Length: 249
Image (tube, rainbow, N blue to C red; front, side):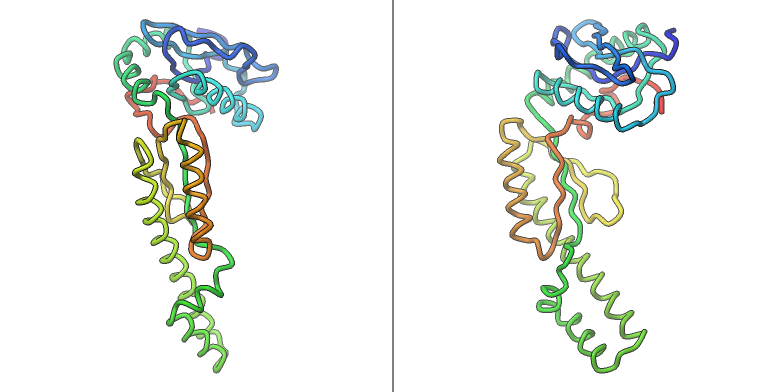
C-alpha cells in the first residue's frame, strides 16, 4: 500500500498515450502514469496527502480528462477516487475489462453537453402581457393595495414563470434529443426545471451548442438556459463501467 494511496483519474484503452506535459492533483502536481491490465489501463498518480476538493485540484482533474478525451474514449472518474495500491486497480480493471471496453466503444468520438433550464429572469413584462390571470391580479392590487393581494400576485407570478419555463424545457428537450446519441436526466437542481445531459458526437458539438443557444435567444422571455460542455462523459458511464474505489474527500 502506498502512503496515501493511488489516485485514479480515468480508464482508457491500453496504449493510448498520455498528454506529455499533463500533471495530476496535488502541490507540486503529481506525475501521471498508466496502470495497464489487458486491453484497458487506468490513468493514476500518487494520491496527495490530505486530499480535499480544492479549486486547483478540481481544475487539474477536469483539465486532464478533457485533454485525454481529445485523444480517444475516456471513462472519467469523479474527483477524489483513491485505491490503496496499483494491485487493487489492476484487479478492478481485470474484473470489469469487458464492461470497460463496451463503455469505451459506446463513448467513442463523443462528448457530454449539459443543459440546465431555469425560469427566465426579468420576464415580468412579457408575463403580464400574455397571462390573463397575472394581469387581473396586478390590476386588483393596483385598485386595492394590501398584503393578501400582493401575496396572491407573487404566487401567481412564480407559478406562471415556472410553468412557462417547464414548457420551454420540454420543447428544447424534444428539439435537441434527435441531435444526440444518448440523453440522460441529471439530479434535481434547486431552481431548475430541467437538468439533462446529452451525448453528442464531438464533430457535432459546436452545431449542437448553436442550436441550443438559438433556442435560448428565441425563448429568452420564458427560459434561461445554462450550457456546459464539452465535458467528460460522466453521465454516460455506468457504475459497472467504473472501478470500485473509495472517495478520498
